[in-house]
Image (cartoon, rainbow, N blue to C red; front, side):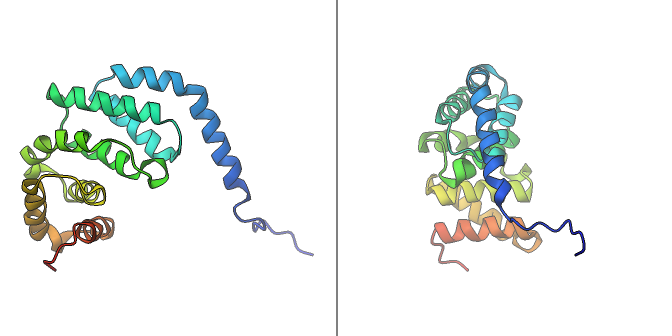
Length: 177
């Protein structure tokens, strides 16, 4: 018989990898919780992105601290559209797509989005649309601005951006094709 490096047990190691990630997060949970309470906007965004990428279904206490610090930084006007986009993206797709964050946080971040709407890159804008759409939050002014901007940029969106835009329109039950 010939030797083969072709895998024969598909998915076997996924469980081991999940367990190792959970162990890693459990080990650093206290550090992440403390850090999320004190860090600046850039580091807060990185913590949120890391938790989103790790797709952990646990550790809500870290997410709560991220959310509280996000609201504090928004009140102090220390967040820009990059931070808002990535934190909301992490909230809307975190914890194996169960989502994090309260509706209040989404409403608190609206002024930052509206003030920077013209300078937000297309893909980031569709991430924001997805976040607000699947969560069913946002004031009518925000959604009107989203829909106006989407009409402007629709012909230049790439596949991931189209995915986000379609889901936004589906969740908003938009009658405008």
